[in-house]
Length: 312
Image (tube, rainbow, N blue to C red; front, top):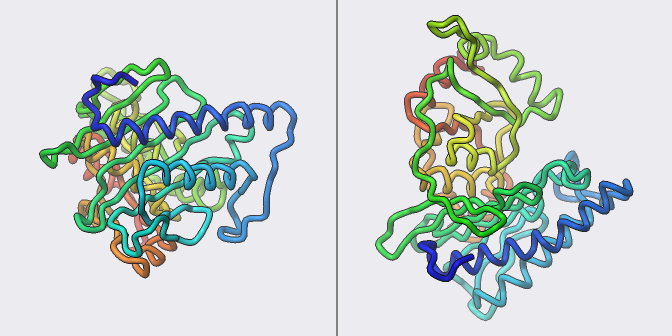
């Protein structure tokens, strides 16, 4: 990426690191897809989730490369218990990593994402996030805090072109493309299919009689990044909930772009993710959050008003 970039210097270094790791893993994943040798591993931490040798390789690779840039930090990866890296016994920065998201699709060369967020325990908020897309031309979604404390978001293509993200969707529900991680038939697709009020509102005809609302599939943090870029209008998770490594990096990107993320009580989700001490980090890593992320507040509220939740 260009040295005269408006992206802060540390963020550029981390973005370059993520790009480098994606370039290393991409041919391995393509080989896995073409040969059918997907290197599936036993998942000791999340028994119902797919885990490959590629996930574990990226987990170790990130830890080694990050230590070359940041002297001390807490490394909180999906693939292992949080650990302190470097000489400082109590470092300020916590680096949250999902090395290879959607890995069961990545080993089929369909979709593959990687999430990295740096969180300041002193400030109780993220200072940068990078979400990488391994197989598409738009490769990076970035959020970072500048020297004045302002948050900014960017998308970066494979040729290094940077695009500021500051115009998320203004659509209302009958004209919206709303996404959901609906791949698991029982845990996620069936609950979505049961949301009749939401689906009927999404299918409402416009004045011209056309039905413009659409439902789509999306994945983890990148689903919120797609809302930040205006590629989609909203993404919802009301069934199982997202783990912190799936929600938080994309949430920060969407926040920096000017979008909104609310919980199912209608309250904004704060940037304090509870990564402020080792006990808190351990607790946060084992919890999930349900949410609605949208390009505008009216759309988020409209989606919430149509959802038939257990308390209804």
